Image 1 (tube, helix red, strand yellow):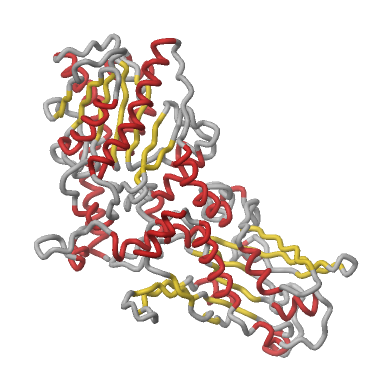
Image 2: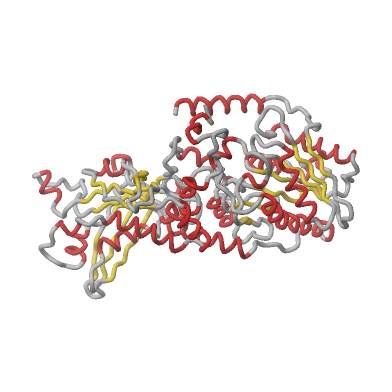
Length: 575
């Protein structure tokens, strides 16, 4: 682990040195593709930035496919690199101007060209930041050439452009592969979600069966080999599918610009809308910080939380309380709020503890519950990816919550304080309610996933099983424990490994204080009885596992041949 961090620090230091250096003009390291003969209409040009450690010429087949699909002439310039993994931000302005000048030498009319940018993977991050700062009068060639739009491939608009409000200034087409193991499809779903109402100018499309490397061609870099998933379509088919999305986008903007200065109506395909729908449903059910619940601890709107209590909530957490507290003949009204589960008056905040009330007239039991999400990549692997990697916003690690730590009321007290029963034993809380809820989240995800995804998962995916709840003797021990994802042998005789999910839990009987402290409880200390806390599996994490990470055991791109990179060599990728 120390080697990984040292290597990351060295890479960051090297990058900073390059960023601080004057930007040289390297217009000679270009791949220029002139327009195909016989095309009619306004002439466009597309300047692309490759992904990290991918040669510029690897994008020629895709460029050819887009040029072929276009009905009008299209120039393509792919900017290569010398020392860094790809062209870096300080040099982009000069490199782009150099590319335009080179195409002008070969016959491009800069006065009338319809210019577009593009980037793949890391290149998509750099090009979008450059365009955000350099468009209009600050654009290429001293602002004399307008950039009409850009295409992000295996990438997406960064969160800084979508929260607290959508602020990106130039229309953008975002493209992702269904089986992209680096820029995962769940992050593309987030991009689609954040562009709601702006689909004409910011369409987000998914290409079914495509992986990360198929935007380019040839042998992938080691990191892509290690993390990408195997595609289900050929490279040629992938390029053709991408071209059918890019060409209409270019032509719509070029024609609209020439006609009126405005874009013609665009949109997102029904196939992509249908693909993203179950993912969005799962993240909304979780109460995701990057979808419908930003105002939570660890979310971008955390400043809205007051004294440990937050405006956002999880719609899934109450499902655990319903499992625990279901009483025949009584209705349940369960509310939830995201909080800092560790907050106390000692820190200037408040306690947030479940409360049971009832209405005997309507036979309704009402219970307040409180949750706090935590994030991490639950994939068992040689590298324990931590939440810090999500701040890089590349889609490289899971974007769903790893767990929802939830404060719930016990069944014993639900029966006594809610349903009005007497002589109720604490044994009512013996069942593994946390495991039951987590399995319900998994089954919900299995049923909600798209049909093709379900079939792929059943054939190749690593399955979840659920272990017994892990009882913790005290609040801090519960809060500091994480939901466990442990790879264990399958019991079905298949020989496959499965992931056993086990939930930390804490439960206290109604008379907990009297039984454990034997002194009167001070008024400033809340009653510690009547609790049944659970670390819950988010339905979004279960769905994200089904769509992406479950496939890594059998369907990742890393070759297994003896003369290729072996699984055991993964540890050396960052060393």
